[in-house]
Amino acid sequence: MKWLTTNLLVFICINVLVAQTKEVKNYENSMLKIEQKIFMSKNDTLKNEFYLKKFNSSLREKDFGRSYFELSRIRGRYFNDSVALQDFYWNAALISKLVNKLDYAETYYDAYIDLTQDSSINSQLLGLLINAELDSSSYNNFKKNLTLDTALNCLDCLSLIPYYRLKNKLGYIWASRLVPGLGTVFTGDVYNGLGSVITIGSASYGVYYLFLNKLYLSTGIWGYLFIPRFYFGNIRMTKYRLEKLEEKRRAKLAITCELTTKKLLINYPIDFRLSE
Image 1 (cartoon, rainbow, N blue to C red):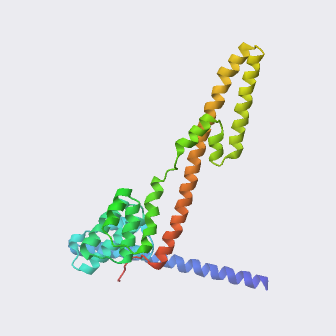
Image 2 (cartoon, rainbow, N blue to C red):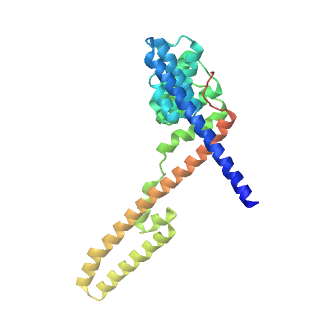
Image 3 (cartoon, rainbow, N blue to C red):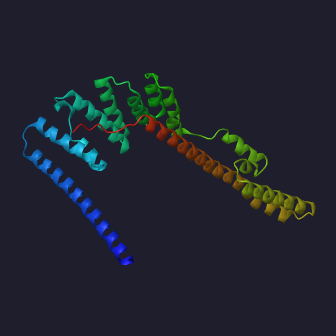
């Protein structure tokens, strides 16, 4: 019975793989035929239609690398259908965002808005997602011109992530200057912070003890060679721990923001507009 079950599973897997291979082959053949038509065509408008067809086909197959390549071949001036042009600008903005070509995404999105004056929540959401990753001024300027649904205000986190900085960083450093190791403790690294306190405290007491016993040469060696190294090394460690703490909190903000964005995209889905 086991051999029958095993053979059945193997048979099913082979059929699935064969079906997938056929689909890929059909897709590639279809794209190749369209490319042949482009090569044979002498009319720029007709060529543009073929470019658009390849672009839309690659979007359906989620072949986004090819989609972005085909996008670069399409020209808006050759469109005769305004609806097709609207859909193209929307798709172009979205695919540019997905492949992280944000300047192009902004250009295509602006062209879409100029053409349609679309103020829907989905349209505003796409604009916010694009502008949030450009820079904070672009995001703020974009947001000023919108009448936002209150649900979209939570996307401010997108523009904050690249520019997030830990507050009062200088305070941590001064704490370590005044009480070596204290700033490191404040960053959450209690083990290394207390280690610095004990090490520098012990070394300082050792220097003081040598001085009391009139071992001036040893006092000078310890005081000159070791104390500055321990002291400034502790400050460098505090700065390092601050960088790590800042990275950790930025990552935490990014995760929270990603979850918020996913919830919004469930409520206001953004997808490609493929009429064919």
